[in-house]
Structure formats: structure tokens, C-alpha cells
Length: 135
Image (cartoon, rainbow, N blue to C red; front, side, top):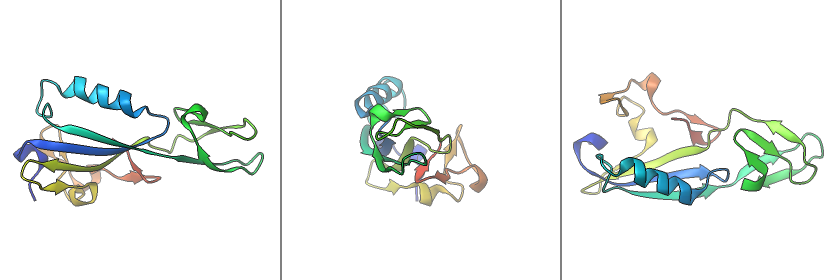
């Protein structure tokens, strides 16, 4: 399977927590990629609900962007704040290179992740945290 560096990237697809604005994420990607190897790549974003189980009032359910502040979650029912620094807010779903090959995080865990121009070891590969991949 080719690495993203061997063929032009056509599309990058990510999932993001409700605490991140998808439009702002797309705008930042466009600005950062404008003059580089990802200039022709399309970014597709998908918002994912963040859940909260409140120890104070027992609320269990989705928390929208108005109740998320970085790693802090505010219970929409009672206002209790929890510190959840173990939650990543962005997950790489896949990368499609020209020609149609698709690279996914699980396919890159054996040294296919490109880090600073070199293939990363399995220990440095993208590892999921609470359903998201940290970068």
C-alpha cells in the first residue's frame, strides 16, 4: 500500500468533537495547505457528539459545543464541570491518494505513518484514545 508521500493526496477525512467548529477547521486546513503538498486535497469533516455521564445529577447523554470548553465538559442538566483531559477532539478517518488508494489509521500502525518525512515506528503510530486518534 502506498504512503501518502508517494502520490498526491486527493482527500483527507476527519471526525471532530462538537467542541471544534467544522467550518473553522476546514478554513484552517485550506490556509495551512495552500502552498504545500496538500494544496489540492479536499478536507471532509464529520462532527461527533461528545457524551457526558454526570456524577452529580446522573445525566447521561450528548453534550453540544455550548457545553464543551477544551477538555472541560459542563453538564447541560445541572451545570457541574468535569475535567476530561483524556479525550482527543480530532480523529483521522482516512486519506485518499490520487488513483483511489485509501490509507486508514489501522493500516498505518505498522510503520506506514509518515512523521517528519520518515516512516514512524509502530510505537509512534497513531493510537486511538476514547474513539479518537491523538496527533
